[in-house]
Image 1 (spheres, rainbow, N blue to C red):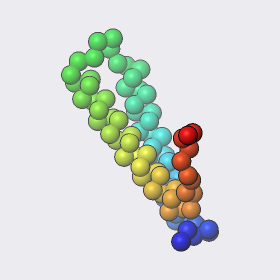
Image 2 (image 1 turned 45 degrees about the horizontal axis):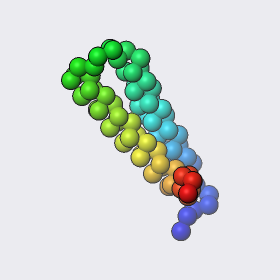
Image 3 (image 1 turned 30 degrees about the horizontal axis):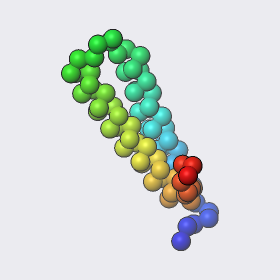
Image 4 (image 1 turned 120 degrees about the vertical axis):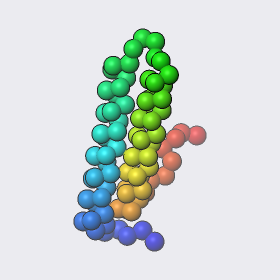
Length: 78
């Protein structure tokens, strides 16, 4: 059952998870801004690592949102 009154700890966890996701997204953006016209294998490896980190942070943010009672249905149109 969903708790309709999330604790302050749940909200703080969610804020921290959102901040981590934002930081990870900014790191992806910074990488893309400095990406050379012809990426080398090291660039591709770094990009993959950054995307992986961003996806983990997004998942953590979603889990924290769920714990805070912010579950939403699918946002995709049918």
